[in-house]
Image (tube, rainbow, N blue to C red; front, side, top):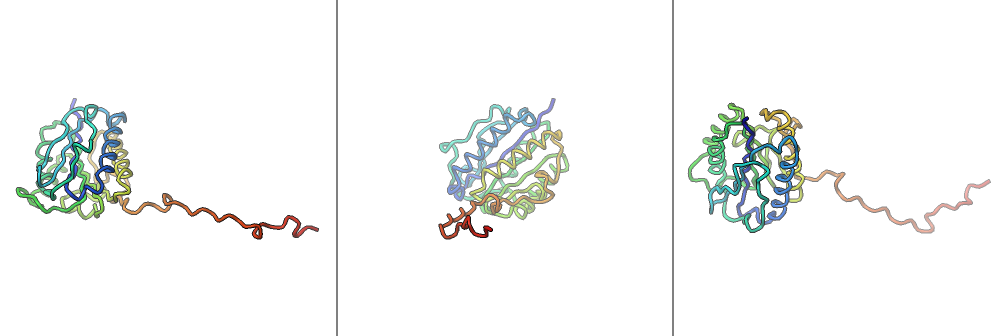
Length: 231
């Protein structure tokens, strides 16, 4: 029986330093959710990080998601610039060895500025070919418009999600839920991975999640006279 491979490409460039711990925590929660959800616990997983200093470096898998290690501050060290096109192309080429469905997740906070071997056109062609072959692509962008950035490499808007440093964990929670839905549907590809009909934007927390002002205590003169109005 062929199994679904989740191939996660994680930005480890210098700009991620400010959001380092939140990224580590959110990534670990995502992996933990995949391990315990019955719709994803049989998935395979491969995890790679990238920057201009290490290129694209695989840190886990491909192997059972149950064996996927958690990320640590010692292993995740943001530095360098963003060879995004090279990293996406190399991730796609490596995942071609999987006989079953493939879910490619790109998580970045920057725009391409350092690729040496692949162009935007190369990546668009690769992504289009693999979508045609039944692969699923998801694009998460921190501090950027994921719909615009994802479209630049061929990812449909319904499979993109924008978030801010303060909503990193919320973004990964959305990703975990959508991954479970994807698995429940038999890993069938969809242009609307997040299920909302358009790109998800978590850059501005919802008003409901914002702290509400506390009511001012009423002074004695504000209190109604219990005898007033009595007849």
